[in-house]
Length: 560
Image (tube, rainbow, N blue to C red; front, side, top):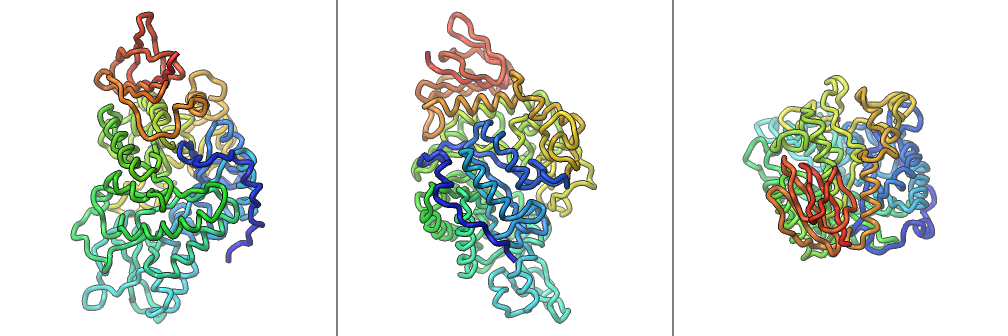
């Protein structure tokens, strides 16, 4: 049963958020993974009250909005991305009154709240799915999912050759109420996550109702999980190949990035636009090209889409410039802002990715050169924050946190870890609870330990250890966000002016502002484009108007 909502947030509750139209075009949005952010009750698991208590920290960091990963009622087969009730808060995170208080407090601090929405699949404990199983073949509830008879003499083979992103077949056979082997159901992720059938009108009706429920609560937008996956190709055709996970992002698949998804989002946009407060949709859409990503952010659809092509780009000047150009060129015709992101809850933190050789992908199992990785991560962050559009930060990256690559097997919880031939299954490393203090139980995360073990040196990376320390990564982020908000030429926009630069160096101008990034392994001599606003490392400016830019360093300039 859903918990009862608090009264809808009055319009005045949104008035305390900075009243700025199109705020999302240049917003810096901070992702909170609730179970790993702050624990208020000492059970080792982060919760909504913990997030609420740390909102002033996020206000002072300088972000515009907070995106919360799922906190809905869930059996937690995939860390909450298996939702049993979309209108209830899981007890491990609190209740609806806690959600209401968090939203209201955030608005009072001029922070907006974006919540995760998981429309591709539900939990197998969702009431619809449980009834579909109990009622057996022919149940109308089965039409809201993808139930099919199997192939083979006795239906013993899956209906098609699709593979789960987490490994193994994308189909599970059910045992019918009479105890016999029966139909199969589709799950592109874990078996506990059956895919909805978006061709059924009841599914669309339900999710428009869910949107209204949370909009009435006062949320400022939704991040749409697996936004590219809702619609499947007619007839669910065989793909005809194995190791399908390796094809993701390279081809349009019969279960991903189908054109029919856009009708869903046009209907959702009509709902969203009925509400005041300039609220937004953000798509998690893995597509083969940035041009196809742009289809999701046409004027009558969604507002933003994550730029995974940028996240996957190597630390290389030529590759980065090419990705920036392709992104801006793709977004300009549809009038949408570019987005930039370096880390999230599904990939190895960029301080560790950049510590390793290029070409290892976005899930890496080795620590690499920690000093190199942090230096590059700091430089990459300043580069990202200088680009036109909106930027996303993942909790703890402002502390320079590395991935925890040496978690014991027995503590891992990523469902992909326990299934072969799918994703690497090492996402737990970026989900370790973040440190707030030098000492204490779980370094200030909570009073009762943490659901994933933290490294012994975590305290020296904590908020307490870095606050007020010149040159710390936390103070670099605070300064960068402050400068970004003050400089009229930063933030929104759709183009950069590239400047001549040595090999391995990126340089671009935006009005009176210039960003220079050295991705090479050696120091480079570059023009001094005015006064140094901020730098990720030591920069030496000479009397003859040149600057010595160390390897893996970014500097922001402003014309005098």
